[in-house]
Image 1 (cartoon, one colour):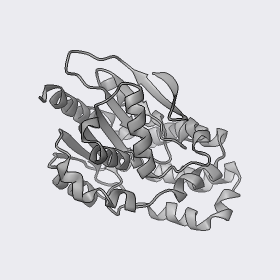
Image 2 (image 1 turned 90 degrees about the vertical axis):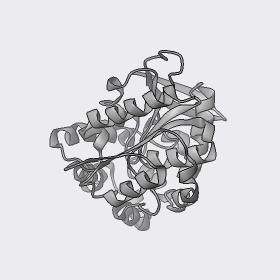
Image 3 (image 1 turned 90 degrees about the horizontal axis):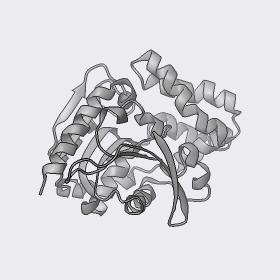
Length: 279
């Protein structure tokens, strides 16, 4: 995958991209990560999906952590950043594939701009009042103490346990830790995480709940049934509100794009195919 950067509305935005548009009617697929990850979350999914694929990095996350300094990195603002970027890179409309916070961004963007979203895949997504999760709230409440944690201590006592708890594949968990810790190591560690955590407010997803049923696009919901962070009942509710099939993965936890990439890719291909054939 190639890494790209562009300045959009004065913000340096970063994404990974591979493939190209196929037949007429094909739409690009845009992958949206959550916390504490980056576009690297999709490294095992994107090669399984045909066509043009782009993994956008949220402002203030991954190697875009410096771009988030002094900026609002809430999901509400991330949706606006995303919409501006979609226009800038000629990826409008797109199939939006969101995990964790990325799923919340996808919901908000789809509601605000119906024409931006040609299809929707939500994977263990934040929604309604399902977030922020308890450990994130605790770190946010600790504030100054969290900020002062040395990087090695933050990794050992906070980051590594969170990542391990979210995986059911231990080997993939070790690989994932290496992939996702590096941006924090380069860009501020605990202080960067705290900036992200302080911007998380369930009101952002609660605000779009009355409008989810108006998102009339092909959709799928994919959920790890053993997710300790985003409970299955939220996936079931999203599937009802979006009138979408729900794929439940027994034994899978939170980081489904890494542990079960084939299941995610299958849902993305189904939605992309339906989107391409829609009038």
